Image (tube, rainbow, N blue to C red; front, top):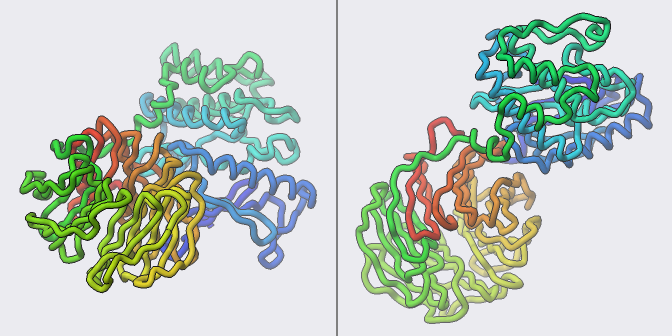
Length: 562
């Protein structure tokens, strides 16, 4: 157990076979009891009020699970057990603002405004969802090691703001109406944030609202400028009708940016290193061989190219097909390439260049290719939903209908016994090799799945989708472990690099997410048009992206990102 509040207990935990670190919040209101492992209502709670609180806890968990803001604690899922309910959240690393104040004392003016901007931006989202936090204070604001402020405890006090007998009240931070049986409005959270700013400026919170009603004055706030002092005093008005009514108005009165881009602008970015023109019309595929320091690219011009890595100097170029090349795969030993084109042709090449050998002359457009790690087989998927195995052990390709609609991507695990395919039918299908016998499906996306990749040594699968999400699946249980959100258009591809997930999207951005908390960590507008493909060198922390502008772009992941 790492935390205890009026309505919940919080535990540090690990999730799944990957042992992803998470926090688990248990609905356990003060006064309740535990009989064995079962939570039982205790005074002042009865069975009816406990059940109502439990339903509200889960309902607000559902709402928070849809939030994707750096200032809102990330809810990753929920479950019921032991007569109660649990929220699975990101496990934050850092200290609460209350702990920070105890150690370091008052904040500078710039840091205080930074906190107000981050917390206020997050509260705009919370209020837009119809929620009132009702317990903003330093102990419920978490400062991560990366300087991000995260609001905690949404699923507790806010869930019970209509129950006066159990309502959470924090002297000094709670407005007077919070002590009464009245509905709270966003103005209650405005009061609490302003009171927190007073604590930062003066070293102590303002007097309790009830004492102020009896005439106890506020501190002078001499450390603040006239503008800030006026804004804070207006937000601390004891009359809710006279107080600053919305978080947006409060931020504006402080002179802070209230545009949505303001919260994203604080995210760190990839370091840009190099950019090279590669394929006219767009880069569609990349394959990196760190053993030979070679990068291979293919594009709409029908060519594949070989580049030195990481210098990105062109070594040779090969006209491969008469139509755009959609996909490219490198053999396990690095000696051969296989390319697939829009006209349905598939050709095998020496990675050093030279004439190619036709595996398939023409047909439905080729969307994905993969080499088997040992058997010399090539797997292919096509626009017509078919998949095929090609190789010397087959007198003719072994083909089968894998998807209704287009089959968009495929991957083979490291042991070579599982082929995973993804398609327009919103599904991933699993096939045992070499017979291609159906073994099950992964379902959960709401649109066509564009790409697929194995991760964690073949124990997991990563899917990229037109629903603008990337999902990580644990293969053994065929269960979804994470849903990564944040892109504004279709995600073309994603790569897993330990705890880091790199994503490329039609919104022109390259992004990095943490797998443990599902949190967006890095972002950059990488290309002038869509970003379609990625390759990653783990030893150097370098990433290369290929985009619709026909260029390769080289990036470095900042140290300490994970």
